[in-house]
Image (cartoon, rainbow, N blue to C red; front, side):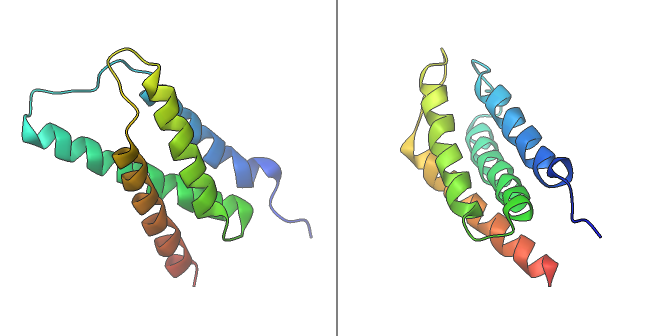
Length: 112
């Protein structure tokens, strides 16, 4: 019996990474919610990278999933640096890395 195909394992992670890249290319995602805008955007950073890391763990079936998610977070912030109205921030990489760690831990726990 064959294992999961490339498409089954990798396509969800690639699609999610593509969505993150597309959202990072939008010049502004600000709302008129004041402080809540900042809180919700940072929470979205954590959640999107938790999902990415869980999908990468599923695809790789190995611990480097977290590291790969963090490398992608760094590249995403670099991308944002070149988008008018956006900025690449080390704090966002830290938030993304924390979200990725939570995603890996939850995925492992749910896989038991």
